[in-house]
Length: 151
Length: 461
View 1: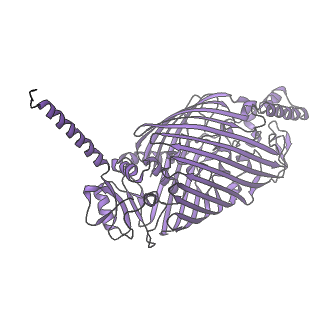
View 2: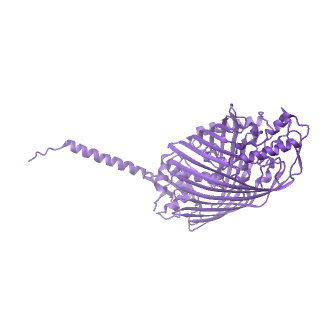
């Protein structure tokens, strides 16, 4: 009968493997941990279609279903949350979204979103501006903003 | 020098060339003030990350500023740039927009452009318009724009003066040619548009009717090289654009029909050697530009290509001063371009760009012979011409290589911040078809093979 050795090396190996998996999934989670948020009471139903959400962020769609104005808030181009939101939620390349805004602004056919400097400022603006839409890290959810899920 | 005394409008010898104005490279206080203003703006932009203004609800102010340096061999580009760098290329713009209702937008942009001595930097209204649109079912939008409108043309015309949106220091000159810039940039009239937003992509149709801005131009400052004025007749242009949902694929088909009347009060102009040369007092000019555009984007790569067949029809404008105004001219140009964003904030680009002013004579030999023949006729018909004067006059014959241009470009861009960008670029050029005549008035003194190195710093907000 073979002697069963309580294999510490194996256990360590398993632990190492599991922690690696956890770490990896953790970082994956962190990447998806950005959500679209709207001002509480905005006339929009969740989940929203991705195409409609991207029409809003590319500044093509300018009104909510009741005809009130959409106010779009974003973070600077070089903020990591901006590119995460573009890639994970909108499924767009950040440079293409910027190009869409530039085309509107410098040909006089539309307006750009308002660029804010921090997630804290984003939270305050969304909470205090009727018709506002933006994005926040998931854990930052405030009672004054509503999460908008994507279909 | 014989040519120093000659009025500048005599250098008007070539199709597709803007005309030189007086060669004045003096520094005036306005220029200095402008430069200081630019430096101020640039230093300001270094210290801040975000500078777009929202004055009050629904009003926005945006702008851009770029300064470019060119260093060339052989030919001048925007100022005297051979051997010594020229800083004569400055672009400034500011725009405001107001959206009193979500579907209504009023906007205006003023630009100032200094490009060698072809553009002196005096401000002009680039666009000033009212845009109204209506959404049906959230995926179909229909609307109109009225006023002075940017002409929808290709991938880059909408934001042509904003260096940030350009793939290189200058747009590919074959397709976005300097000599016809004023005819294609913006126009006064009405544009209707429809936009379909579907999971398979966005489809946009824009149709414009109205008057182009050529009435603000002297024909002598355009490529036409004649002393009179161009008066626009109603023209049309349009663009059909497809973009996949994630903007990875983009196709566009653009076209235009721009008719103009040429009128001049003088029937004679003074030739290079004091000879009186007859010029037409009346004529017609019609542009029919077309453009096929395609682009493929990934996260790191952008592949772009555009092809432009360009018809120019003239009647009554064939003279010795303008010997290449064929009654039906068919020009062709195209480019292939690759951009690679190899690291965040960095972009490397390369492009091959070709232009033929007469596609039936791609190597320019026929046009060269025709030009030499006409100049020889002029020399024969002129009495009391010294051999030096005859030689100088002959320098105005247009060489074969002025009827094509093939350009190879390599460039590097670095985005210091989302608002500020610098780039460096090298061009190797065979031919002078798109070379502005302002800095190169005598065709016989231009060089066929030349290099152009450029540095650009640009901000936007």
